[in-house]
Structures are given as C-alpha cells and as structure tokens.
Length: 180
Length: 83
Image (tube, rainbow over all chains, first blue to last red; front, side):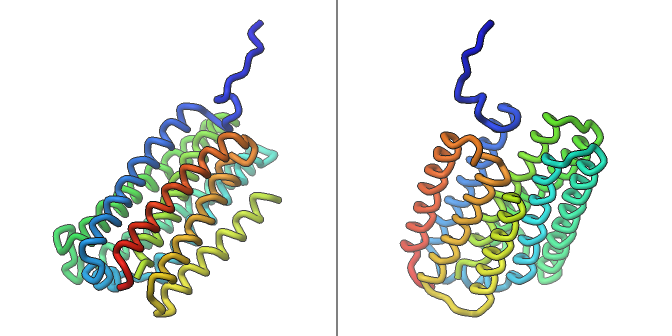
C-alpha cells in the first residue's frame, strides 16, 4: 500500500480546479497590470473617463458578490443535501443580481455613446469587466450543475471556481472603478 | 463561524473602500489605501473562502505571490503619480 503524501494532497478540493483557478488569475492579473501600465502614460485621461462610472453601484455589486461567496462557502459546510442546494441556489441568484446590475451599467454607457473604442480606458473597462462577467455567467451555470449533481467533491470544485470569480472582482473593482 | 466572520470583514472593507472613493477625496495616499483594502480582501478570500487557511504551506505561497502582485500594482500607481 502506498501511504506517501505529496504537497497537492493538502489542497482543498480538486487539483484540476486549482490549475484552472491559477490560470484564470494569471490572465486577469496580466490584464490589470497592462491596464495600470497604460494608465501611467495618461493618468489624467484615465481619471476623467473613470469619473463617469457609477462607483456606488459597483460598490453595491461588490457586496452582492462577497455575500454570494459567503453563501457558496456555507454550501460546502451544510449538513444536509437540501441545505447545500439552498445555499448554492442563493449564491447563484446573487450572481444573477450582479449580472443584472452590470447589464444596467453597460446599457447606461451605451445610451451615452460610450463604446469599446471611445478611449483606452473604456477598451480596458469593457475587456476586463466583460471577461469577468462571462466568468460570473459560467459560475452561475457551474453552481446550478453542482446543485443537481450534489456531491461533496463536485460542490467543493464548483464553489472554488465561484470564489475565484469573487477574488478577481475584489481586485478588479478598486483598480478600475476607485483609483482616482 | 470563521466563514461568517470573513464575510463580515469583507463587507466592512468593501464598504470602506467605496466610501473613501465616493467621498471625493483623491491623491496618492487615497489610491494606495484603496489598494491596501483590496489586498486585505483578497487575503481573506484566499484563506477563508478558498480554504487555504487549512493548507498553511499553500496559503503562505498564495499570500506571497499576491503580495508581490499588489506591490507591483502599487508601484505602477505611484509611477502614474497623483491625478
């Protein structure tokens, strides 16, 4: 019998999900560093464009997402199948709220003629927030799937993906919306 | 429960950074404070939500990489200067 343990055994959840999480963090991380690097060339222009964003709404969306992450974390510790599904459903529902607010934000920008090509700030804004929103959508689908196929291993993997989406947002939000 | 305590901290830190930003105050110190709050939030998510507090070696590794990343972000903000 092989009773040797390796370092990967200490990681909570599925190793493949961690590989995916690290890959996604690297992509978002590179995108945000690219944004900050271009911002160095025109801080006043970036600040002016950024001032048109609704910071309070985006701040509310941050509260929605961290609360959704809390519910997802509770799902991995729930004692019963029904409670696990309830937490997963609630976490996914808050994900839908996040996307709804994000959709309103995009609609407002479109109504004011702000597009991907308006200026470098908005190119990064649409690329980074759009890519993140796509991950929120994927996360909602994953939470739904693991609620159906509700086993400890799948719930841990699905919620880990959701926490990655949360982690990206808490760094992306202040950099894109709050830095003056 | 540790998860609920983490959530309370995340809500407080998120509200704090938003209040600072909408208060109208600007400057390098404000920008760096906002990034410090983001760093704290990211650490809480890594340790509590992702569960790396229970895998200390991995937790330390993630914290080190995250620290290096946030310092790089802060350096770029300093290079851009006050707006």
